[in-house]
Amino acid sequence: MDNRSKWTAEIKAKAVELGFFLCGISKAEYLDEEARHLEQWLNQGFNGEMSYMANYFDLRTDPRLLVQGAKSVISLAYNYYNAEKPTDSTAPKVSMYAYGRDYHKVVKKKLLALFEYIKSFAGDIEGRVFTDSAPVMEGVWAQRGGIGWMGKHTIIINPKKGSHFFLGEIILDLELDYDQPMRDYCGTCTRCIDACPTEAIHPEGYILDGSRCISYLTIELKNSIPEEFKGKMEDWMFGCDICQQVCPWNRFSTPHNEPDFIPKTGLMTMTKEEWMELSEPLFEELFIGTPVKRTKYEGLTRNIRFLYDDEVKDHSSFEDIS
Ligand code: SF4
Ligand code: SF4
Image (cartoon, rainbow, N blue to C red; front, side):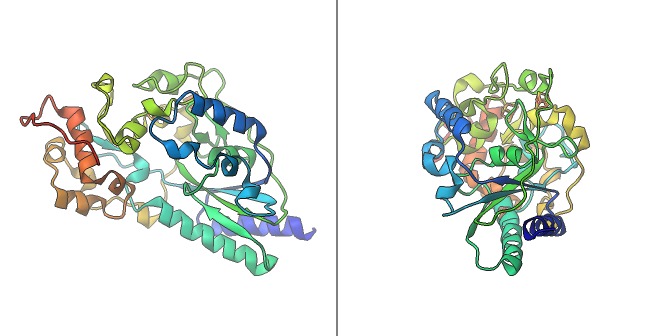
């Protein structure tokens, strides 16, 4: 076995030891076709207020501009699936990925550990780690590295693990053995398209109008949520899991074993009434260190009021998130 194959096998074994449940490797190269798709998507305004998606177009489509001399992209998947359900089924919902500690920190620490390990045998190499933190087309690399295919809802699915996982990458100037891209197993299924309450997924699939997605409306959007979405949010106050919940491949999801992703005490037992009266100190207690902090107290309460303002006695004006 030459060094390349030996190192590839060692990297994959170490990834598993660090808790990643999938690892795939692809050649670092310019993303020609994907660059054209991204350009069309941006031209149609599907990024909504997420103007950062249009930034660093060149870096986004060529990893060799992120790491000089880059040869490989190592894609890794980290499970966040949690089968636990809130006890009050009428309570407003938080997307499963946001229950516990901010994944950026959890996953980045493991990516750095893997990169240090690689340097311990490969010597003085250049590289960078990423997890939803820089202009990297994570889904594209995951598909190219054989981690999964991009489903019609535009989320990466693995045929044995489902889609409830975070992605991370190490881009480095080390040649490794490359995996085969994963083929598409969506077939004739349209469950995610049919179930999306805001019609954010294109009728033919594979294109997401981000500006209509509940994840965007409840997390990214700084202004008021447009009235056209009234009654269509299906109780989601932070993110949305509907298209993943209906996907048949998620019958293969298994619970994570990451202590940092365990929800804070009290989060899953909050009632709808308690959410409607959420105080700032309780918000801090429930969400400190979690991705939900991103919306701040004002953002989350704006979302709750948008869901239930007909039921709230106080009809005073709702402030936009500044
Ligand atoms: S996350 Fe929700 S709103 Fe967004 S595409 Fe999926 S089902 Fe639609
Ligand atoms: S619900 Fe069906 S169409 Fe949508 S991503 Fe899953 S398999 Fe593909």
